[in-house]
Amino acid sequence: MGKRECVAMLLSGGEGRRLGVLTHHKAKPAVHFGGAARMIDYALSNCRNSGIQHIGVVTQYRPEALHQHIGEGTPWLQDTEQGEVAILCSTQEHVGKDGFTGTADAVYQNWHFIERQQPEYVIVLSGDHIYQMDYSKLIKQHRDTKAMATIAVTAVPWAEASRFGIMNTDEYGRITEFSEKPDKPVSNLASMGIYVFDTAFLQQYLKQDARISLSSHDFGKDVIPAMLKSGARMNAFAYDGYWKDVGTLDSLWEAHMDLLGDNPKFAIHSQAWPLHTVVRGEPRLFKETTGMIRHSLVYDSCSIQGMVERSVVSAGAKIGQGSRIYDSVIMPGAVIGQGVTLHKAIIGENAIIHDGVSLGIPNSNGVSVIGDKEIIHVKGEKLPKVYIPANKLLVEMIG
Image (cartoon, rainbow, N blue to C red; front, side):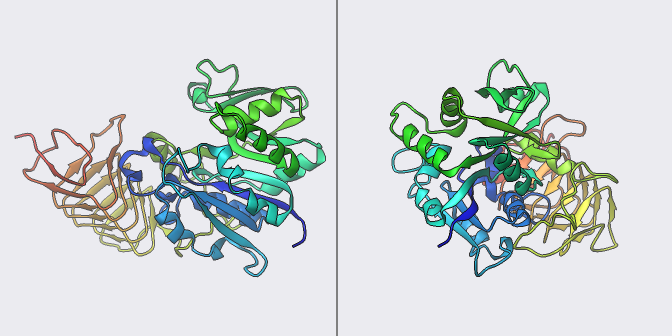
């Protein structure tokens, strides 16, 4: 096999604990986003649109939904004869013995995939971020500047900086300082979890890290700081487009709201940068004319007979007569009964909300969440006293 310019390693084994019930039965990158696609489809689409045709998808935690979704990887290959989307699965579902112990270990244990392709460069990606990036521009900068490693960075709000790997650069874009999730960040220039490495350089540091028993074998905590300490040339690639780490329920909800409006912050369906996925279909204003839809993103195969405002309604969802949906996200296949009221809620895939249920409080800061396939019943006619996610929940009403 001839030498290739770049191979992608797409890390997709995260548990996503902060997404609560949405990840009880599947890995975070398998969670749906934007109506039809899953989180992982955004990085996979970036690869295809950037001309990267050899992708290793590294999975671990509850991988079944991801494996079924990806299949042979056909939607993300320009050339199915020459390209490859390979699933690289851990033997264990959780971090620890016999499983991948960190992001760097996940790449190291699958080095055989990289070695088989003989690439000049390796690009390491996360499967749970929402953005559109032409990786070929990142790779070109890496090559032109003769860097050993290049990290994509973006400015984040100072209040959120402690959630990310934070760095400083000199006037030439060379990284001078890096700190993973600092308590007191000195900068708001955040790592996007997108790295390009010279292949031999990466292999050297992965081998070195694997020999350190006290290492957590993580790129941000261990490998990147070790590379920087060595004095190797490491550059930042500045990215000013839309990028969202949807690792929390609040950020997942916010990212969906960014899809709405006359000029949305993030336009997921672009002719210039297509979103590739297994499910076909485009968003449209409405499927059935018996309801009222305002400032919302609604997909084909939906049945809407109620009012929907400032919400995302995913493929195959159903909303019954007299229901009112505000500022909410309805995942694929969810069924909302008649006379239901939702405020700032996320309803999981194939969940069922029975007639008359009310969830969420208007103008509240919190997000109400129902997990995949949960069934929510109601008795009485008033707002719920309390909501606790469960596999099957009877919502008690204030008498």
